[in-house]
Length: 375
Ligand code: HEM
Image (cartoon, rainbow, N blue to C red; front, side):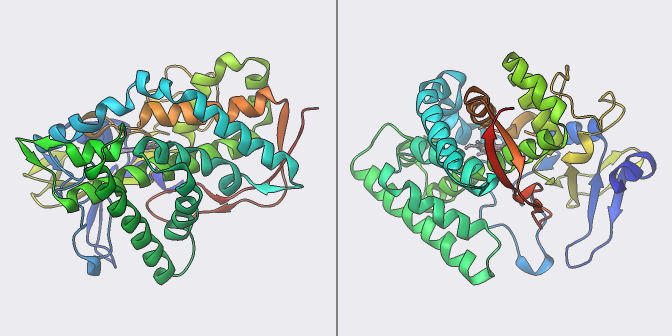
């Protein structure tokens, strides 16, 4: 509701400093897209997420895929791009279906389960582990650590779990340096930009970027999508009757859930947007759930519609930093729903969903469900 008001009345809103520094909040689709498009004027190198003022700069600034500007960004992305093409993702589809199937079979055996943790979380995490060359014996350990690192526990538990994950990738990078494999970590270890290898720190921070990017948003989007289907059972029915709708349904899930709540840039020069003067150094935030419900772009934007076409949402970003895992994410979400449909199951609520408490991502933290035979 607030976003609708902002779109109509103050689409380039200056949010005064609080615990967070002052920032501009852009809520209209066209403005958000224009900022994504212009990576020279709007830099990612000083961070892409709001951080409380006391927290200082993002440690990955200028070093990870998400936090570098062109021309280095393109060179870095060139090292890993090949791993995320339609062809590369197709090569791991069989594995993905197997994981999705076994996770769903396990959920069916239980009286009830949490769709987020027990179903949606494992598929993207196992897949990114597989692509990064993590031995299968360690996937479950990394799953547990990532739940601790990005879950609701206290700050200390989260910090230690994240350090454990980094330690894991440090060891893996050392192993891959000695014994390279056909995987993403080996690519980062061997990669050269302008003839120079990436530093140890750059390798680790990029492992973290891929691991977190690969695991977090897909889990939340797939779960938020399931919740949308439970709230709009006629849309689930349409999909069950015609699984050929899965591709448009997945994009509608991405638009509807818009899990990255905001993405940030820093202006590199003075620039005007809708008559507001933005100074060099100002923080500019892009509110994706708002852009993806902009009534100037989407017909009836508050309707969840698996047949929506066109659907040029910005849930995966746009331009220079467009989500490198976009193909992977779409396929993971599709297989998850497809496996449920093919097993002739319905998903029923078994309790109240609990939302995440974050300004970075939005969607369910937990979604208690029962998987039951389709009626
Ligand atoms: C539903 C799932 C996903 C959503 C909604 C999502 C969303 C996004 C968005 C909005 C961006 C642009 C950030 C920016 O412009 O600063 C982005 C970039 C990125 N995403 Fe995703 N993502 C998803 C899945 C994935 C997956 C599966 C991976 C796998 C590795 C991934 C890895 C990345 C990385 C590394 C970047 C930075 C790319 C760059 O800066 O060139 N994401 N993602």
